[in-house]
Image 1: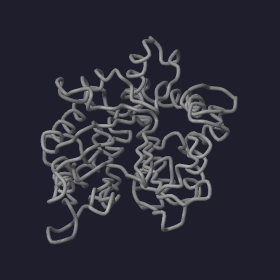
Image 2: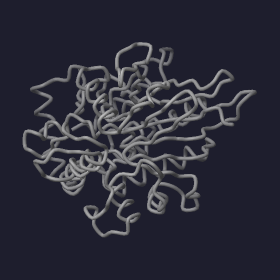
Image 3: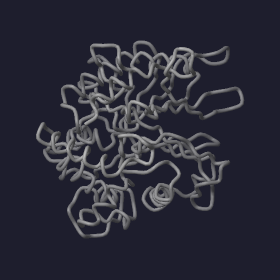
Image 4: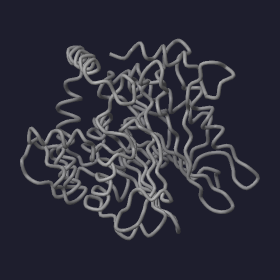
Length: 383
């Protein structure tokens, strides 16, 4: 058995120049630093072998909303291939988010044998992996990578042991941006009653009340694919940068950075209530919380954790642990991105979940993982 049962990353945004993992010709990125840290975390001992049994990629790994497809996939293939060459990984589990939702569109239309995503039923896949993974291998891995070592789910993946339950989800389906669209009657996600209903409600321009995850996904498709992916280009970038600069001048982030995400930090009331609603009403979580329940998500770029012992979030009467895997887009020249690595380590006393955050340092003797000069260089691409 390998020492790490699970490892999870999200929001790498590979291909985006603002990502600290951008494959630049200079040395101003964290590719080697990140891989070396993963090597360190997955180093075995006398009881367990080196490596990771499941590497779970929780969405927005590939930046298909801002970068060109070519640049996004070149960066993704480089990072994943470099990692696989140095770390023994039994299986990759991929869960698309909103910025790489277009990959899910391609995968699912191929899987369902349809020409249009709108004709695919269902649009979610949570109980088993899709079987057709050739597109993912072609774009993201070496051509000879075995398909049986890849699982692809959407929008979440669940891993259960005798004593614990791990629920992985990117988090965009309970994003605040969907509630904002209620103003324009794009979505009524808060009325969704299941996962399929929720998925449907993020695809269609409709006034109907979402009843399932599928319904919510329908509305996500409109925002992620029609509005965001298909308008990608220089004109939209100019408009987006102008609006971003205008917004930064009027409304400074409470975190003092130049990056604002559409969700708030880990423990605000919005996130707390939305997670409870999403798990209970949309995903049908019931008796699973009788175990040590862990909800691992990304999307907000605000990494951190709230453990069961903190008694902050309760679902069906039981407290659960929350882990947010942060993000790898540089927020400013001053603050480190919350580049978090979630992992579950195997010990003789059972599984132990934990998290490591990579942070910058000004001087070599300071505590930290990498030079702040990398932030200064990557921050030049903001706006």
